[in-house]
Image (cartoon, rainbow, N blue to C red; front, side, top):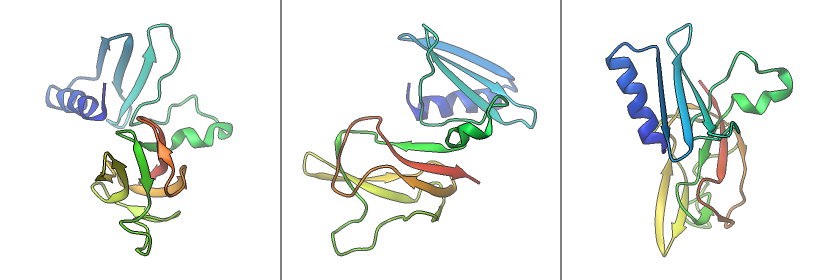
Length: 150
């Protein structure tokens, strides 16, 4: 299940005024619940009950101060390749720690099979942490950035 499919589920909920939707596929169970202020919270779990990280993570009421990083949204690698902060070695990085970004802003480039792929943010927020170094090889689904949503 990818972020696009999750967004489609949220859109389905909004269009049909649903408060909750649950789907299970290939051992992945996802449950979306509309919160008190109309915000959809996502709960993804494997069939055996372990929590699965997804492209969007929501703050839950059970969160404590010791779990501060859990309130951040992760931007994850959509492919295997090499991470680059900028379009060229002498160019400024797309984003730096503390930058405020909008949905659709390019945050990095991933080189895969000699192709440069722009990675765009799907959320508006502040860059709280850059989790990889420039030129570092990355894997599919690897967290690249932590974003504090606005």
